[in-house]
Amino acid sequence: MTRYVLALDQGTTSSRAILFDESGAQVAMAAREFRQIFPQPGWVEHDPEEIWETQLEVARRVLAEAGVAATDLAALGITNQRETTVLWERETGRPVHNAVVWQDRRTAALCEAITASPTAALIRERTGLVIDAYFSATKLQWLLDRVPGARERAERGELAFGTVDAWLLWRLTGGRVHATDVTNASRTMLYDIRRGAWDPEILAALRIPAALLPAVHPSSHRYGETEPALLGAAVPVGGMAGDQQAATFGQACLEPGMAKNTYGTGCFVLMNTGPRPVPSGAGLITTPLASGGGVPQQYALEGSIFVAGAAVQWLRDGLGIIRDSAETEALARTVPAADGVYVVPAFVGLGAPYWDMYARGAILGITRGTTAAHVARATLESIAFQTRDVIDAMERDAGIELRELRADGGAARNDLLMQVQADVLGRPVVRPLVTETTALGAAYLAGLAVGLWSGPEAVAAAWRPERTFHPAVPAAEREQRYAGWRRAVERVRGWAQD
Image 1 (tube, rainbow, N blue to C red):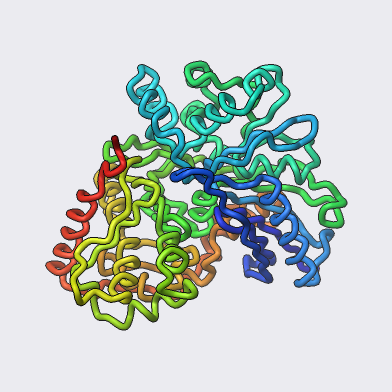
Image 2 (tube, helix red, strand yellow):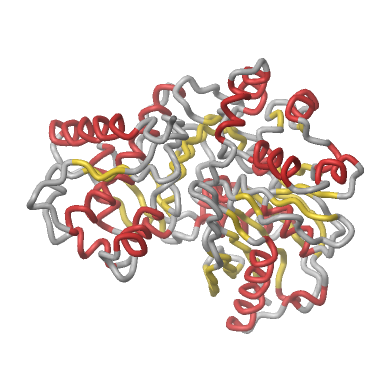
């Protein structure tokens, strides 16, 4: 009998469920978008109940559409938008506030205060992170300070904190399991990545009660079983990983020097640096990779680009120059070049390697001859330029020259973007046969925990390329275009700062 693994891929704009068979082939997929809530400029929230309801709905739907029963599932894996912060009541499971999303910038001033304090060096050294509103710690601080009675209830042990993986696990297990994995824990700005534990000094400095925190396990681990009524039978939850570490695993970047970029709402580049954390001097994050199930703990340098696919959504929803995101490639191909137009999509600031919370978006180089096609092409190019910013910084920090970049995520299906990326980098860009590598990574981690796959070698053997894009522009042209991008970025930095 064929055994299956169900991956729950809870993203920033949609909840998805993807079913894989024991060969790692995708069998079926279901997805549903949910609301984006913007209470104030720079603030982004989600309704945790809506996240749960949409995720459960697509899980049930994908099983029904594939004709697969819960009893046919060897395991379930979870991968999730990272850093997004949920606070809920232990007794009832009710959230006390909307989730504060990773993109949210409301705690920028709080981060500035921490940066100026003695705690800053401690956080950087122990967590591998830069101090930024991106991460969970200051979001949790904000909730404890702004939700009436939350801090007192947290200190009494009445509330639970988690990133989205922990929230889904809690609901899937009927509140029996409050846990996260090392990759998600490492994104909170509260976790010592070298010791592998929550850091009591950072917790004390940021006034975060330890009673709030979930247990931390390897990414491939038997976390518990789902409530039988949810899917039709109890299913082992065998894997959890933040979306980018899950994608790195699904891309089989298992050796030092291998790197992938996930082109989603944001862009996330991870380079495997081996068994020891490599500190960054270039504004990158040092982060643990997925482990467990025979996979040793390795680390990566990560560059987080806040706005990538979201810039294409802005062309659709904000400017109205396309009706569907898929139209971007065709529109951009109607012009041979952007003709000196640069789009800097710093809608919520700039991530790595700049970490400028006050940068804002701009279109530069417009002339009377500029058309919607030029803007569309420049928007795609902005994704490639931001990726080069990060890759250049990684190579300096790690002392490793990238041989190729493995690409995945929704926008990796855009052939023009992939070619532009190869041109901007001057390196091959490889798109795998299965582009849903985030969900695939979660499925592999879950399957390893229950013995469906033998070990990481099986994961590496299953990876297959679909197409390789080779650089096709002269080096001089590449560097000239990139120099223009760097000038454009300098124009927008610090724009929203008082």
